[in-house]
Length: 357
Image 1 (cartoon, rainbow, N blue to C red):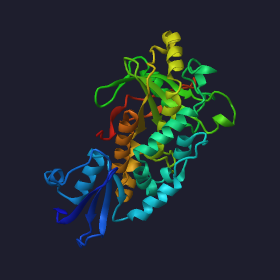
Image 2 (image 1 turned 120 degrees about the horizontal axis):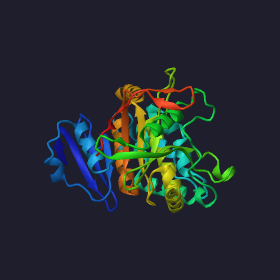
Image 3 (image 1 turned 45 degrees about the horizontal axis):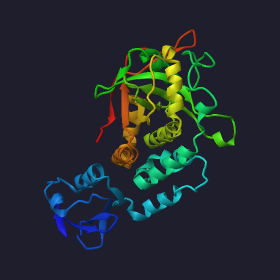
Image 4 (image 1 turned 120 degrees about the vertical axis):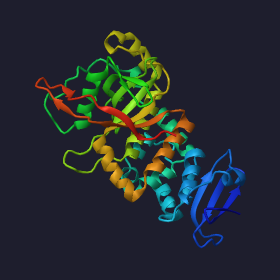
């Protein structure tokens, strides 16, 4: 037992996992405010004592961010809350058609009140299981139909509608497909296609599968799946960043199974697409105007979801070798032209919505 910031901390190490148990302010053994579970490589008490934490929350954040710790108990929620979330998003059955699609459509991940626990409950093992099952169930569209070549930058109806995410995706595609847009770290992404289709047929096996909002590549062809979220025009509810992340992850698994076909098609159509896509696993980027992230920030002050989502992104990167980024666009406005083509009114400024690492 060690002491950090006036609290007794018990580090208990087993064969497969380790827990860091942080006592409540009463410092009574067995009465814990936080329980954080770690997996190999484990941490030593000596390492914890040399970190000079300014608060218990700093300690918990350190374990979650730098050691991919899973928070099993917090003062506000306790272990029963995690148990409930885990039961609601239990591992899918072996014959589940689309386990990641089922996950991002679940109510727990689309509520700010529960998304912190939902994100915490998704271990690396759970992510690997669902990703591989989703990959095996992928429709492999490229074996039956084309991915590219049907879009011109004009909406289906040619008129303004409530499909604001699609309109923004088209506006970004039109503005940046030649020049690309720069992420805050300097990486340039080139939009190749918007509303990229994933279904191979209109049947039960393809049910519930959507489209990739914006499909981009780096200059060398490394692919990125962009999930766009837009705040409600009427101040209604919007999807949570956790739902956006898991939706993009589902599409990543579906495309990962068919990247060779997609890459060959992009090579055949490179004059029209302007870029060739490498046949490697896509990365993920959640992209939204600042108004969307501002509304999420209001929920952060009440539900404290941000750190758990950041930690989940890190677990995805480690377990699945997929880069995860969250980006906000300042001064992002668009309009519908008389020809039915959405366009940006001015160039937005791209910045991190959630820091990396």
